[in-house]
Image (cartoon, rainbow over all chains, first blue to last red; front, top):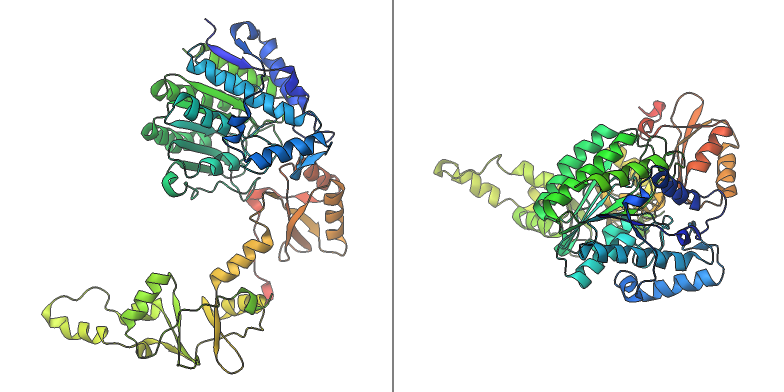
Length: 317
Length: 226
């Protein structure tokens, strides 16, 4: 039984960002190559891209924003909302294909066809706000998935664990007043890293107060601090929240060899954290875990990091 | 940069003959620490702070009969009994830099803003100045702060700004820490981008030092002023 899903599609390489941009098709090629070279593909349930019903994108993003994005893309604009967000005529469709592929993955998990999955996708999503593209992100993939699970599958409590080295401002803001989605993020301290949010006193708003948790980590720190924060902040939070499904915003950019941050995590740490998250999924969410690629820019390190990640998903039973 | 633009205009005020308990209630209700004391025609005659009230109160509640007299005395205290007469004030035409220097010098957290006729026009507090500081730092915009150490000589900032422009990056703000190691300045460009890798490399190539974030500081005072 191939109980781990693997979402990947060559069409995810069609979103071009031009020269000197770190969020390149080469990232995803490196991720795929690492998994393929390790002989893991035959052990996975393959999932391909598909176009989603737009109502699921609208469950998170403003209709006006979606139309504005489509229009900008089709008009041949090279950036959208801010110079960081480079795009090409294929960007809008690629972003949709990513969301559709992840929703298909979610269906398969909910149908018990698979128990967990890694979604090797780009563009990433966790910076995307309801009506603004930010930090290379257009549609908030994790947020769309969480809303889909709530509305289509009646999931009451969704837990999102985000270990990309940058704070997932978009995901936090989308769910900050929702007590049914717990958003946890561990990232480089916002005074020293993009986007400048994710301080420990950001804990949610209104009915959602207490359902957002941030662990900012100082520059130069690594495995020790991260492991302590995960145990102290994430594990205890999920223990009381008891998520029925865990969505992972999986960013490999905190690796010591990734120059997008000053955090110094080892390769081993990334294996440790997915094992830890799987244990939480065993305990609370009937093993259901969807890992979605966010950042990670070291072409040299991505193959091994992705291979380890997927290998652990496959072998965790 | 004038105080008149940054000050709080709808000021909570109090009469000198009010009880200090009323002053405390107003502070609690409006979450403020200072209330200017004014006459009917808005002439400033003093200021009462939460500290003035605390100092007038006994250190712990005095419930026994023996201390009833002290209690009664405290409860009957009026604003005029504990307020600071002749407080430090500032004019609407002063600047926020003036206010910063005045706070540093007097260690007072809020100033009544009075016009040339000594009439109260507003209040300016550390909180108002922080708001201005958050604004000029561009902290509400997503971006990344970096620190570049440059020699203290003409034209360094131009090189930094040119490099940023060449990479098509928007600049949210620039802070310069002028008091640094001998002959050096620390420049903190706040870049409205997630992608600072290329710029950091570029600055190093240009011969600048890109400082490790754990070594940053901006709060050193000019040595001559210590």
